[in-house]
Amino acid sequence: MKRTVHTDAAIIGGGIAGLWLLNALRGAGYGAVLLESHRLGSRQTLASQGMIHGGLKYALGGLPSRASETIASMPGRWRACLDGDGELDLSSLKPASEHTYLFAEASGLGPLSALLASKVLQSGAQRLQAEEFPALLRTEAFKGVVYRLNDFVLDPVRLTERLANLGAPHLYRAPQIDRIHDGADSARIEIGNLRIACRRLILAAGAGNEALLQRLGLPVAMQRRPLQQVVVRHPTAGPAFGPFFGHCLTDLKGAEPRLTITSHQSERGGPWLWCVGGRLATGGTERSVAKQREFARSELSACVPWIDWREAEIECFRVDRAEPQQDRGQRPDEAFAEVQSSCIVCWPTKLTLTPDLGQKVLAFMPPPEHPEFPALDLPPATVGDPPWTT
Ligand SMILES: Cc1cc2nc3c(=O)[nH]c(=O)nc-3n(C[C@H](O)[C@H](O)[C@H](O)COP(=O)(O)OP(=O)(O)OC[C@H]3O[C@@H](n4cnc5c(N)ncnc54)[C@H](O)[C@@H]3O)c2cc1C
Image 1: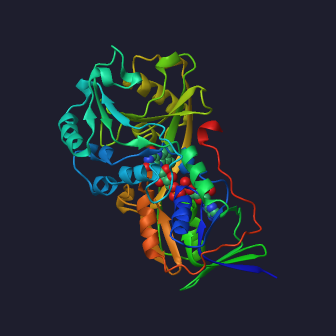
Image 2: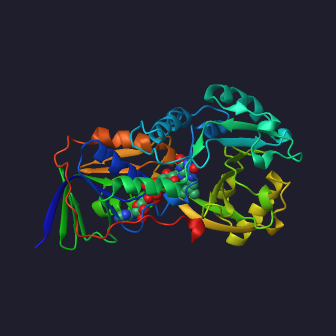
Image 3: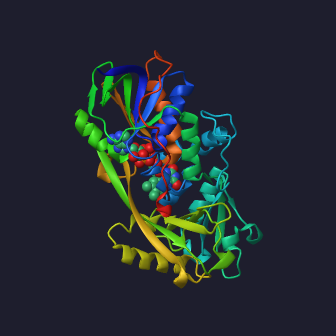
């Protein structure tokens, strides 16, 4: 005999998208449950650099893009959540950094300097005087320009933990879904003797959406944009190798920062490590690990030459960004939510854009019918580890 439970929404996938949606739906009076096949945040979310940005970096190509307009309001919406006054209560969460920085050797900025000056005015970012530089750049050896942006950084682990706490006890681990069926008005999921009947099935499984879409026969295409991220530890550089959050634009070629750096501590008070993305990671997918290490060392030496990088420990990890298919595989401009029969197919496309995703999904929901959700006989889903700890 199968036990059938009824709910307004069943969410598949426990990255930032699924966790945010679970909490947003419950906050709006819906009954909802989340099913995670592995561990919460385990693919892109915990690998992410956690920058909650307003899109200024997308303007580096020289033209204001639609992406920068959509994204501009996001830091304010997240900030309201951190202040306990937004869509979700994230008031226990403190940013890993209140700002991010753009820096470049003055001679290496070229035509970007005029663009930055105009964008800076619009975005409220500031060009800093030498005495205001972040610690990494406060050295005689750096003769460049530094802008402080209003973008801030959230530690992806703390963020995932907070959303998981908020969403408990509605987060379950389900390594395998035996049957899945969507109809015009409702969908069903079967796991062993359990049947979950939901009015909306929300596909928020990141790259896992591809297989789910195929299984359900739904005509939504996904793209992957691969990265080879770099993790840097520097046991011998001492305090020079402290936390930094920002982008290096020295001798920039193209529209993407040469390096995007965020900093993490495995334990409070422990040594810092840097996670480095940007052009290094997007342009590094064809390189072997050995070549990517070597290239990272030479990029760090070119961008931050006052630190000796020969002793730095450099590791790499590969991860795909999973998104709705775009023309020529370009970066999507907005969060994606599309209704297909009783399913809502979702990709936030950026951590930053998750509040936009939440708003879109709520707009697609019929009024709540099953605000309560009974406990399930499944193990709880737990938060995963970021790639730099494993
Ligand atoms: C290296 C990197 C850095 C980034 N940095 C930033 C940044 O600084 N700022 C920013 O705004 N964005 C950033 N992003 C983008 C952002 O991280 C992603 O857009 C976002 O995390 C995607 O979240 P998601 O929930 O859709 O997917 P994921 O985080 O991938 O979560 C999907 C979840 O679904 C689960 N799952 C998969 N299949 C199934 C299934 N069949 N059943 C149940 N569960 C399933 C997975 O185990 C996983 O837990 C970055 C991305 C990467 C990869």
